[in-house]
Image 1: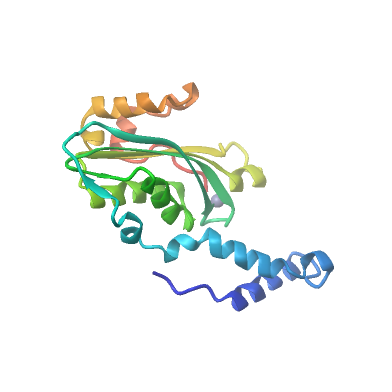
Image 2: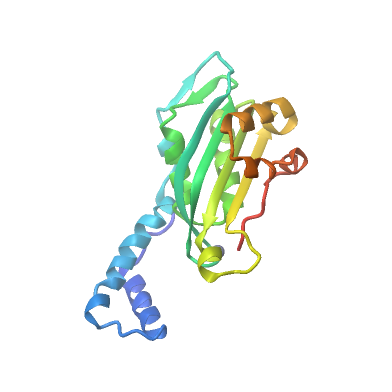
Length: 212
Ligand SMILES: [Zn+2]
């Protein structure tokens, strides 16, 4: 848990920013901007104040089956910690239960806890895999995130792809090629993305490196 944001200080900082980029913070369109930015930031970084245990509470169930559970195409929005600009896309989560499953609706909420912070895509991917490993002690977990980075698109960074694919594979998803392929097969990623999934690289950890 982090300290709650001091809105007055944030507003003052935004006002300074406005003046520094050559704007007049007192003109009509900008008068309430510092307050709006503070409000938006509070939401966009609300993950810092959320507790994973509270999210998962009462949503863990004992099961006997050990079929792969997969939730794909979970939308997320995050802020890159290098430029404070958005990166956003889809997250796909799968795990092989040992004896516990989590309510399916909890996975998107778990993603929100970590995406509503200043992030890099690789860390976000790993944190989701980590928290599922810890909470469920599954036989394996796989997380794939595909995202577009506005800091690359908007800044016109040459020869850099604004699209990045990252993965975190644990347990059976790391050690067993068939489990991993079953997961990737279920994702039915677009053709051009499949090429990024060189199994050797997946075993090593994250897939593509996110732009910075
Ligand atoms: Zn960035």
